[in-house]
Image (cartoon, rainbow, N blue to C red; front, side, top):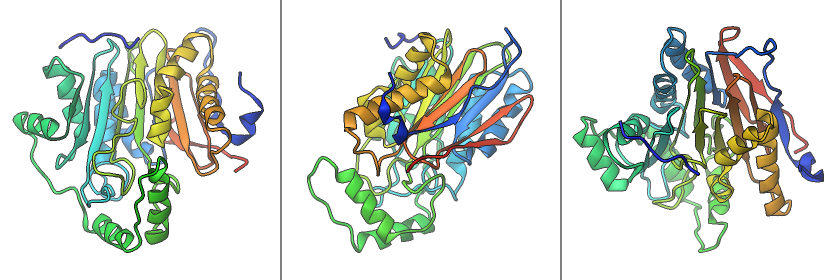
Length: 341
């Protein structure tokens, strides 16, 4: 395995965002481990597979890979993996990254025809001197490693795309993604998993019984996006970041805003400064809101964090963001929040 380089106050705007949970309580000086947390309600099923690894003293890295693969294979989940809604050209492209406690990391971007991009990302980490592989190169590598091509566009997602095409309009503006989403929601208003925006990445963070952290993040990205668009999910420091001395963080929502703020890295660095997981997530969200100058009514970004003590927290701009928790006390907890929006 190759060693990788370490990637080197709130305001009155707080009414625009919502806290989802306070740090879990532990006895003084104790650590809540093992534990796994993941974004959205579909994280419950993902956590269950991760817990099979953690509960038998397995490694956090194996747990997060196994866990998010559940979401990748879920045909009903139209925002992650197989069955994900395609880009505007009708092509399903997948992004994923994974990171361990030694700062080893791997990612694939715009990968087509492979059901489990998270497993390809892990092999990028373990079998190459690189961190990221993209497009045709990522597919070539996956095939060389024994993965098989599969058609990822299900009939349900194809029909939703075809319906969207009837009214889809494009213009070369900086906010094209939001316009695509508005059109998508009008043309294909079927209820989508997680929340109304349908960019519901699954991000997972785990702390194992050995005291080591790992994380994984995987998505099919924004529905009907421009072909080749990459969000935050496969970018180390944006969609996911792990520092075994401090904790880990992951993001969900509009990836462009997460990338602009190097969101997950920011959350971890704030925890290093003494912020609780929830406080760190809140500060990261508030920075986005401040930079957007309150133009966040139709924008969703959420962060989820886990520290070395097994304490967790989250914060989001919009209501509806939820996450799942699994530890020795609870295996299927869903934490939901409220909002002024």
